[in-house]
Image 1 (cartoon, rainbow, N blue to C red):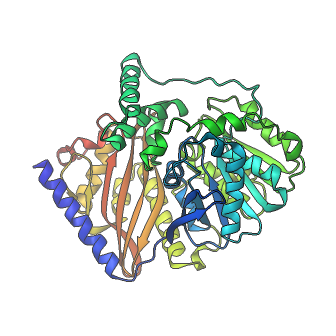
Image 2: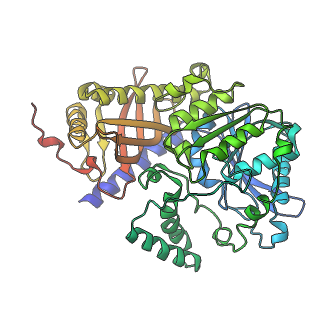
Length: 475
């Protein structure tokens, strides 16, 4: 019966999305292609959004841009994101000759991409080793950098020691070692084996194993020959030998360092970056690990959006809470921005009502014939059942819920929103982390939740999986 319901839900979703597709639909602009370097390496790129300013994203490694894109996609609502896969990464050319994998080649590749798109001065966002690479580019081409955001950048010097925390028990660690061996022996199902391996390795980069479940980025969305390239770490080896601190003092562009203080690198390594630039600021993400944009999206997106307006983040970023950042001009912006602002306000209101325990008020944000498709539960139809459903979720342990809107598509009277949710108990501990697809219908000029579908990303049963909401005592 459960499999039949799942298939019916999938068919319903496909039908609704098909209706949206047939109407005039507003969605983020997406394009892809290749840039050819002087030594004939083809660099794959992906452009998301159509904002007036372009933000070039330099990924860490040895991975690819797909581990970043899904989690930073909200920036594309206001900016054009230009992501590219470095040589021998992602969908770029597989390169095995180490002579073509030294740091200088990677630095020139950024310049090649900049020239290809005729960007006079580039805004850079570099994460991890991509931050170190962006810093090296700025050291060589300081007049080509408009601004730079460094997210948990790799240390400038070798004096900083790593302190990895496995976040694994002995059994999980054994599974991790087995998965690593299987994947690196190039199995036929290499993508599946890649997921099995990196899903566990990701725990090294987060404060806890549960934190890692918030990540949407897919490091395995890549040519597997690149992921399994024995020379994959050579660039990291060569870039560590470079001393760029004297050159960084000549970079006039504003630089924002964003860093989690629970990273495997000490926070002092990030402060060294900040002190090396004459025009810089640093934001500390307390309790966050190597991916602050995943651990604390409220603070991350507020800081980045404020910085990209031309000023360093102020204290107001710490008060930013909600499903997304709404800029002052969004209500008069593109149809996508207008719809996004409307949905964020609804989701913020839903969160506020649920966190106050106003189940009827929360249900009023749904259409009269709305349906919730929760994990491992039958459809919940209508205001009365939806009221009871959210009440039960609270009884099962949810004290607060957070929503994050990641992307949407909108036609005249129908909207498809995709995002993340986090549920916490009274002790503020995670009890569920997952993703949602919400379908909104416009009635009398007002957007209402019509179909709400969500699923847990945890490896254990979600408290919303227990379908006893119809048997609640009405006390």
